Image 1 (cartoon, rainbow, N blue to C red):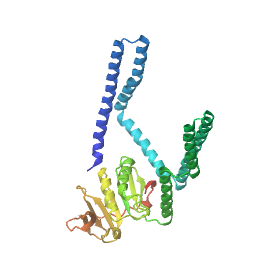
Image 2: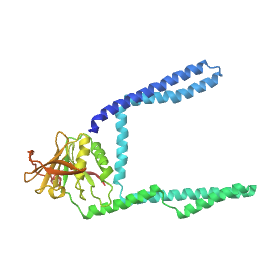
Image 3: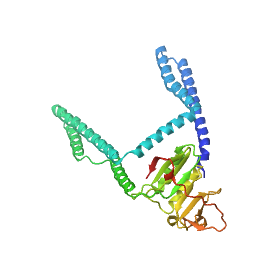
Image 4: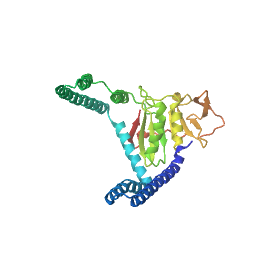
Length: 329
């Protein structure tokens, strides 16, 4: 299913919902004002209630109507802000992630120390008041927080940050010492980089996140609205096919060149692309043709004598001006 086709419909429905909520807020405001004017409360109380209603429902209604009228622009701004945050997170080095983990751990320790001091102060105060139960409660809190401040265990968030830092350090080391940029996927006429990022994130639900770095994807900008994807640390045999289907789901038409030995075809290079039915087809540099074949849920390419596809020379991004944009691992 091509998800990108439905984005316009979702945006239209979102705009309608926001506008309806805005008008509903104004209707509630009108009802509240009508009720307040007819009540028997003092004039000052009615004015204050009306002012509060205008501030809450009137402000909310006007904002929602403005948001609905400028829905596309507001949504695009929010999405771009989210994307920039995700990109900044991906660009963090291992050292930056470790520093962030250390900072969070230090902050948690200081919180425990502060609570310990407050609880100890409570112990002193209730000792003068001779309140035994409160002394026991405050003493227990102080002892627990002091123990946590001394032990300072990793929270789940800190553990995840440290694990991300270790994994990023491993992958950076692999990228520095072992590079394989032979396979390349070309995407042309792409209006927004976000489409590729979304597709790779969907692909990554199953294929990224491996400690050995396989299936790591680098995005390169090679021309206006044209991008290239490479696999610097190699890939699983079925990863290219699944990446193609994810890209196709966002209305993109990828074309890729892969070493034949990696996808079990023949010749030296195999060019893959998607036909009009969304089926992955391929042709090798020695003229053999292949098509999708799935047996027991396992994808592979099978010889297809009925296909007659032209083979184009491999797109060599090393010979072109290109800019590394992002890498997903």
